[in-house]
Image (cartoon, rainbow, N blue to C red; front, top):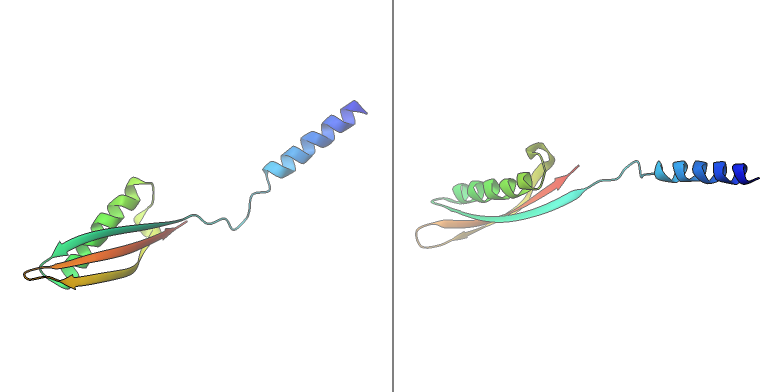
Length: 88
């Protein structure tokens, strides 16, 4: 009886450990700002910084997408904020 209970407990532990969700998805959000002489330059600058943050935490460029951006005009330059969304 003791061997049976031990075997049952080991089987239950093996099933429990292998029961990870099949559709588990990890996501990440990264925000960065940048500046440039034009709106697209500011967005490009901010996106580079956001992708650098993402890469430094283990994300690949192919796993990240620009979800949104906000551009503001100043006297002689533009500033932008970019939201980068990553998933794997």
